[in-house]
Length: 236
Image (cartoon, rainbow, N blue to C red; front, side, top):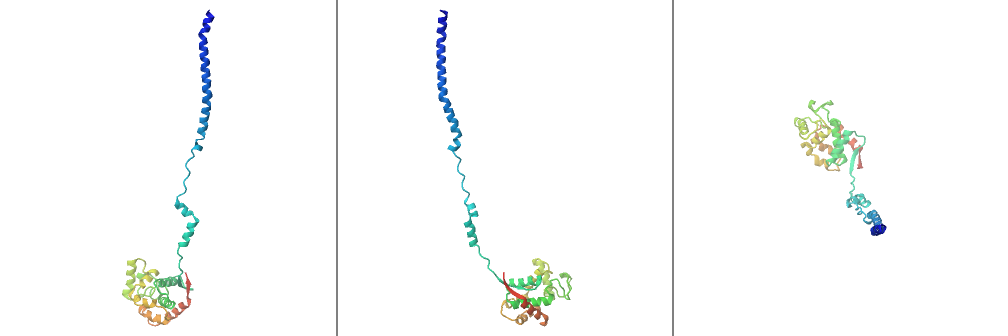
């Protein structure tokens, strides 16, 4: 009787445990494959949802680097037009600076340029700091004619100093004297005639008389002919 009652007590318990084990086995059988599929699908997410494509470079960078753009720029760039100018074969730096300056202000005729240069050579040999008699000195230390065309009269001599003070530069420099020279009344009176081409050196020399105030033609005319022979036209 004792054994029978004991067996009657735990038999339902064993039966319940067996049912629970079966349920757990079924649960695991279904759940484990699902978990495996979820893990696999998680690793595939980047492929399923790829990152957005990289956008193309901005249009301006394509224009800058493109061959077509560079070609177009070369096509529309204006060509630099060549200019005919006179250079002085065998002349020194000061002579060439003066020659360029007078061409820049509009004097193009070879004989006109040669006449101007012949006069300057006679007066100063193109030395801007030369005083009358040949002494090279500062503007303030000269007593007599001074500079490129030997400014002698009081108003013209002091006019050089006033010009340098007003517009900058040294009264003893070549550039300042060239600028001053072409602002003087004496030069303005002959400038238009010097810009007209087709005349002889002697004709231009007569024109320069009122500008320089020379007494006789002398060596200045010979210098002018020498320059005319050395002036060569080139394209620059």
